[in-house]
Image 1 (cartoon, rainbow, N blue to C red):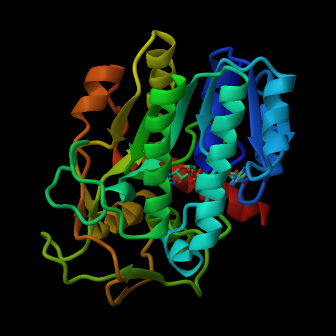
Image 2 (cartoon, rainbow, N blue to C red; image 1 turned 180 degrees about the horizontal axis):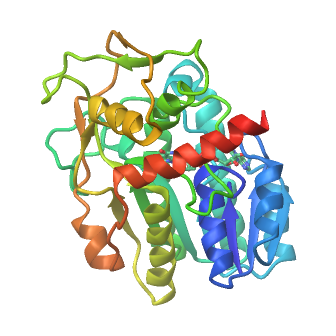
Image 3 (cartoon, rainbow, N blue to C red; image 1 turned 135 degrees about the vertical axis):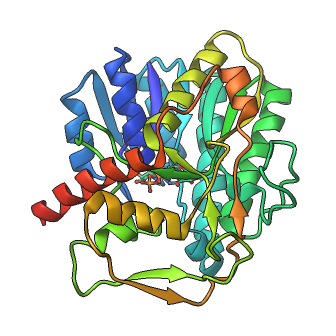
Length: 330
Ligand SMILES: NC(=O)c1ccc[n+]([C@@H]2O[C@H](COP(=O)([O-])OP(=O)(O)OC[C@H]3O[C@@H](n4cnc5c(N)ncnc54)[C@H](O)[C@@H]3O)[C@@H](O)[C@H]2O)c1
């Protein structure tokens, strides 16, 4: 049985769906702080899913799960993940992302569960010293969110040495798209991600898409990011579970496509997919946005036998189907 923390959220729910489709029995542990009960209800129709509403910051909540279910491995998505908020309120991030994870790891050790796949992030690298960024790039986060994820990575190394806990840390670049079935998608109450923000402007005439900075040292002046499709990202998690099940050692991998798209390119692709002219306004740069972030994904390809299959247009298409659905339900 696989325990998925944060399985009611965006990435976690897509991972749960694939686990269920492959016949796994899954326990979702989530406090629904940013996740959704409706998502859990949708997933319950797909396979054998147990839902436990609980908070990682409460040791008894998470410890109880290991007492109640025979867990073989954990995939840990639960965290807060807004960079800007983490700068205003670091306490919230260190408590949830670091202390919450410590509770999870301690409960695992106590119940002799020794395999975990963890959502880390490109934000652990900080300002890039070179691109594409490989896993040997120095990790120097520039905000509390990135710090909290790097702290967890270090804790996991120490827990391996002391307790034999094996972890795979997956450092995501920009995750994009919705499930191709249309049943689940990205649903953040405060949306900070580029593609859903552009697409939301197509449904609301009063809403103009704000493009932050067009004077970067890039081909068209806008920031370049590496967009990894959600279903490709999920398949890497399943490959990481397999890697650990086969006795793989603690390791860490970038999840990206090895290529980048500028904000202008993404915007134009959204106009193409939606066949609409989307209102746009250029704003000043946001502090802390590097010009280019692109993953070197060779290591994941080699060790996880994984290759991303979907392109940017497919991510935008699935996102658009999902955004339309959410808009009509409003
Ligand atoms: N979305 C991205 O582009 C991206 C990029 C890099 C890393 N990540 C990481 O991936 C993970 C998932 O991100 P997401 O976009 O799906 O976010 P999300 O907010 O949609 O999902 C997070 C889930 O965790 C739950 N949760 C949070 N704190 C909890 C706690 N203390 N106890 C129990 N449940 C808790 C929330 O209710 C939510 O369901 C996060 O760890 C995030 O840092 C995301």
